Image (cartoon, rainbow, N blue to C red; front, top):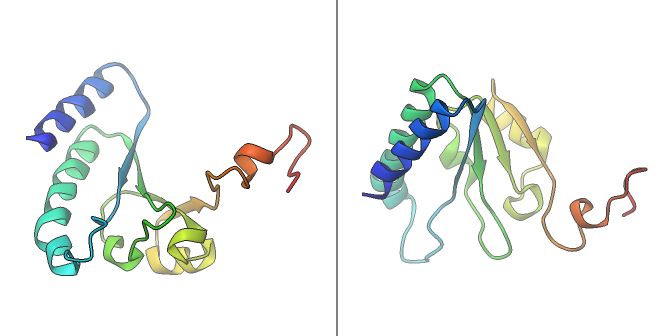
Length: 130
């Protein structure tokens, strides 16, 4: 049901003239759920949404959302069919270089933390104040 609503949102965004979609997902943060659930349930549902993004000829960015205690196994996401990938470099433990090797032919970006100690909070117009 949720995927159906998100597909409608993707179509509506496309109709409004947007250039692309930032698709945010993460592993379910529960010790009782592991890779088998990810592969058989979550990946299938995420794949439906990614197919909808790609069908609309949008620029698709995969954001693997990690924050605080919410970490992800980045290798589980390597075959997600979006051309650009972003993740929390400090949380998920992969540098941009390591991620580039992992995601091979995809563009990668990241490293912009969202805590009060990161550049988005402490940066200045002149540059990095950290």
